[in-house]
Image (cartoon, rainbow, N blue to C red; front, side, top):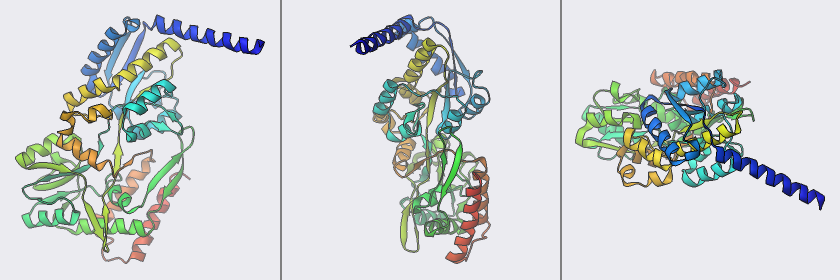
Length: 404
């Protein structure tokens, strides 16, 4: 009985302490890093948050322009001097956890995130059983833009290429990029991922490129590179005489200006090798907001509440309206404006076939570039399946060795 009473009294004390912290709020400074285009919007929304939550009315919010890539690097270098809330891309999650730059979400906030965001973005902020960030977008991936006056059927890669050839035009696809070339490998069932330990360190490579699946993917790349319509690239601003390009939402305005009324977009096409057809796949990615650990519990409560709001429905809708950022929030995804967006609709369709990008060694990207360059140079032309398997074995061994 005494033990039960003691437990009850302990719980009451904890609850009372939590209530006092919540009631007192937080009146100090909170620093936020976001992309330059989001600075003013974030400042405005932070003030709206303060106005709606009187306990945080005295809090000072400082918003600084630090892009997602730089933010992750800066946080890993100096956690203490970094921002309290910062935007980053999902492939940096494990590195940030390993650096002690992210605090796990409370069970309550984790449930809200799960309920309000799409499954891909929820998986992207999760490591093991714990959630470490707030999804902010679901819009980092690639799909097919095309000129519908020339490409009347964008469903197959062979068809897209042949239609471009007939028109004397170009098809852009950056196959010497470790990001874009996975569209072929993941399509056939070949994979390359890296396991991380509980501290976010890379510990093991999982790759089966040296396989019939890998050979089929490589043969698909070889066939594309042989076409006179093929150009290796993914930047619409640097493209010319093109009627199709594999690109992302960031280039929508550029492509629309080039194609005018013939502007169209859809999921990536299929490709066929040795009589078998595959749906092009590839990476999908997400932006998220992270919260760094805090010594002051009152500040942590304030920062968590603010981050949850800045990643929520209202602010995601505002980001879309201002800059076209694709939402991860399920309600915003179903808004008429988002559904009417040609590029975002194409990406949403493609993400059904994409894999979330995890953490990769830096040398993975340069090694993949080398493989793509060999394809473009014609090194593998006319090789047998056995010879292609030998080449892929060399490539695979290098990628495995990056974590040994």
